[in-house]
Length: 188
Length: 188
DNA sequence: ACCTGAACACCGTTCAAGT
DNA sequence: ACCTGAACACCGTTCAAGT
Image 1 (tube, rainbow over the protein chains, first blue to last red):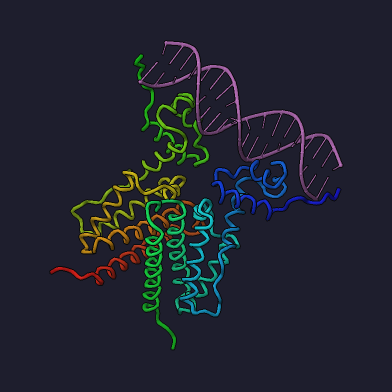
Image 2 (cartoon, rainbow over the protein chains, first blue to last red):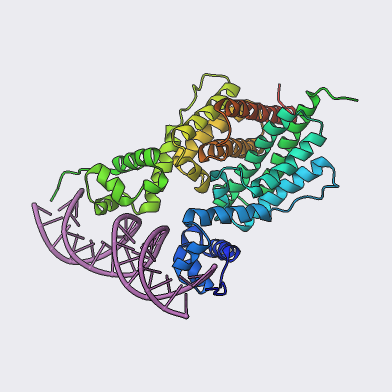
């Protein structure tokens, strides 16, 4: 016993993501992933439980790829930076991104992003209930747009148009936050 | 020749949708759909080009299921009615709904819903460019929420909470429209 | 401990053949 | 015109066996 490992979980997930980016989600089969790693399909089962677990891992790795904004920046800037970073991650991995809407938002990668939003909204002076509800709204609007764009629902539109759409979405979300702030009694 | 048809395209799509609702999207195989229709898998290929076409057809049938609001109602009411109808369609078919974000919005079913929004925004007095851009924003926000809810991203939350979230989303969208109207020079 | 060979049940799709 | 039988290449997954 004690055979040196040829692959590990990270390598399996990286190969899967690369394959999806290059040839589409349907090309991500256990055999194709194994091929890319120079290994037989059966070897993967020591590192992922099954194919669903493999896809969960890929989704998680995209989430971890979203850059967190500088904590020293003003809260509003942090929110737009995070939103833009999410959109860019979607454009980098259009084949996989739509899966983000189909997994429970309870993984470390999801929490990591959500906590940035929580923190920003708290600094904006919102009540805790508002913070939690608004985070869900901001997240679904952003993810919905990013997934639509990546998934091809907007195939007919130009990049310029989609950039303008995204910026208008940002404005809409900022307005919603401002209104929530105005409705919040604040301590002086 | 001239053998009486046992099945048609509508029957294939209906059986597929029913199967997805009852046993999940993965259960929708050509063999399972054929079984449900009392036919062999190969018979399906006379009515759908392939499996992708079958899924496209299922998505389209969900879109056609969204009820169109009474054209006599005020435009704002029509928009919220349409949005609620979309959400309900998602909750009826949670397994398939996430696919809506992955198909080009260029089918008759998609156009049918979009035209209701166009008409309402025009009645609100918005300029044509605004109409088109706002429709995309309203649609992605609504679809993003509905797909997230249906796809299970909110699995941890109560129905009451999600109802409240959805209503707040409606308010957010209504505010965006109002702001666009205020920024529009109108003829008296 | 880690990887492989062989095997199983199932998948989508084709094509020629039946009625 | 519509459906079927037989066949093909490919899937995910298991289990015992090799090093």
